[in-house]
Amino acid sequence: MPEMTFSQIERLQGTGEAIDSFQMDQDTFCAFYERTARPVWVYLWRKTGDSQIADDLLQETYYRFLRTRAVFDDEKHRKNYLFRIATNLAHDRYRQGKDPEQLPEHHEVPADHFDVAEQNQRRSDLSRAMAQLKPRQRDALWLAYAEGSSHEEIAQVLGVKTNSVKLLLFRARRKLASLLRGEE
Image 1 (spheres, rainbow, N blue to C red):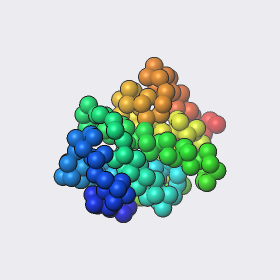
Image 2 (image 1 turned 30 degrees about the vertical axis):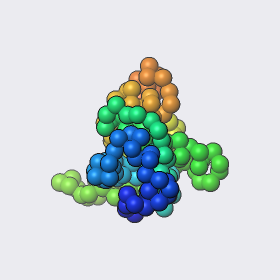
Image 3 (image 1 turned 90 degrees about the vertical axis):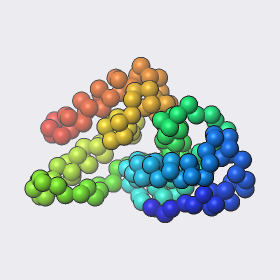
Image 4 (image 1 turned 135 degrees about the vertical axis):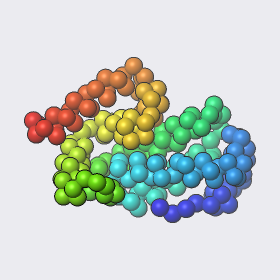
C-alpha cells in the first residue's frame, strides 16, 4: 500500500484549508492516517478483490476526506466518515461497470497455532461462503466483526437506517452459517 505524504495531499488539494476545516494539523492527520489507512485498504481490497484498485480507491478516499468541510465530533466519527467515503467509491466503481464487487478468493492471514492445512481449508471455505453473500451483507459483517463497528456506525457507512442493521446482520450471519454448513 503506497504511503501518501501530507505534502502530496496538500498538492492534490491545492491548498491546506480543508485540513483546518476539521481541525487537524499535519501531525494529527499523519497519526490518523497511520491508524486508519490499513483497515480502510483491507476493507476496499475485500470489496474489490484487487490490490491496485484498493490502492487507487484509498487515495481517492483520503483526497475526498481532506476536501470535506464536515465537522467531526471525535475520532470514531472521522473513521466512520472515511469508511462511508470508501464504500461509496467502491459502489460507484461497481455501478460504472469497471469491475465486479467481489471478495478475493484467497487472502494472507498469519499462521498461528492451528494446523496450517486446516486453517487454509477454513479460510478457503469462509472466502467462498462470503463471496456468495450480497455485497451489503458482506460489508455489514466485515464492519461489525473485523472493524468492531457499532450498529449506528454500520448504518452510517452503509447508508441504511440504524434499526435495519440488526436485521441485516442477523440475516447475513444466518446465510453465512447456512453456506458454511453446505445447506445452500
